[in-house]
Length: 191
Image 1: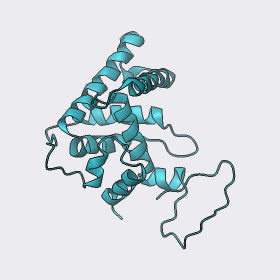
Image 2: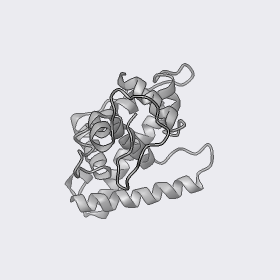
Image 3: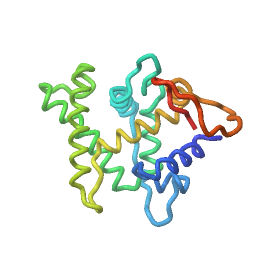
């Protein structure tokens, strides 16, 4: 199974709730929406997104998002699967997050603040995006941090380190067993 097939299946399981889910189901192509191919990310942008993702899913006894190369995954998904409006929200969000860091931490951008400060900042943004989601009308745009968080989770749990080390992975599943024993603390299953 290739990565695109895996993404399609994950999107189906999530009920297409991930922003841009319709593009996962159609193989990241759309005839009625223009995909903005002009988006370019630099190596610094990828490193920045890796640090955001690593703050969301840090390395513990399992690999973190940086080891899963989630920053690179995010850039591909934004470039290939998001329409121009979503791309604009994501790119502006990268700048807003950095500006919020500078305002809160004496002019230091996200890359220069401590891991504890990064966590504090992202927790505040998470609360903000949840509040935005509660008050959002159907046609309102998604919050930029929601896009970043969704891509982080999708990228991590569909990566090899995320699927094989953070989840229980069976490369060739056997027969269907309706009831599997579960012990508190067991890992979830990877698809």
